[in-house]
Figure: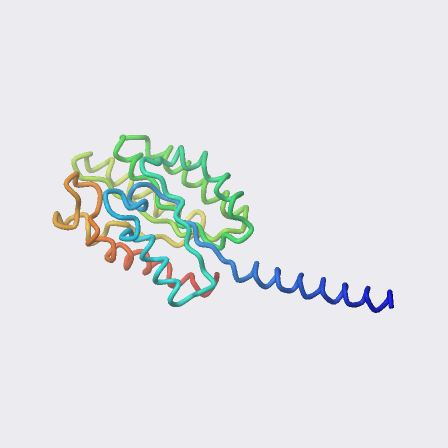
Amino acid sequence: MLISKLKSCHFLLILLLAFFSTAAQADKKIIVFGDSLSAAYGIAPEQGWVSLLSVYLNQRHSDLTVINASISGETTDSGLSRLPSVINRYNPNINMMIIALGANDGLRGLEPDLIQSNLGKMIALCHENKIQVLLVGMQIPPNYGKAYTQAIQKIYGDLSIKYQVRRIPFMLANVATHATLMQEDGLHPTAEAQPIILNTILMGLKPLLPKL
């Protein structure tokens, strides 16, 4: 009788372990780690491109969960300080980190070398934790001067090559130059611009989805 009960308990334990193992494998997470451009600044959260991405993926990849860890005003320096806690909170199920930072650094006129160093350390930290990275490029207005704007733009291409990560050249492509798609501050996209941003993100994301 005792042996029979032990066998039953052992079988139940195996089933529970199998269940939790399967659940853990199915619980894949994509973290969006950005600033106000990803945090739906000035619009309803559900209108933002990250929420639209979540809806898109839920309809096609039910095992993927999108988590928006973006904070308005975030710089690469503060992002680098915050990233370890985000990884610790959601791992081991983070399959991808979409890093979309650098715009605020550029607007503050920070040194391109510092921005590149911070972003590089973030990518390296993700790789150390076996997290795939999609790097989202940023650009700043031309009034900052040709040399500086080109230096900011170059950062993302250099990092993409160095760390072998896929890059989206510019988050606000097809948006930033259209005044009707930008809010009154001229820096943040409107709700109408969000589907366009989503399409830009998906161009870089879709090829990586089979690897998640």
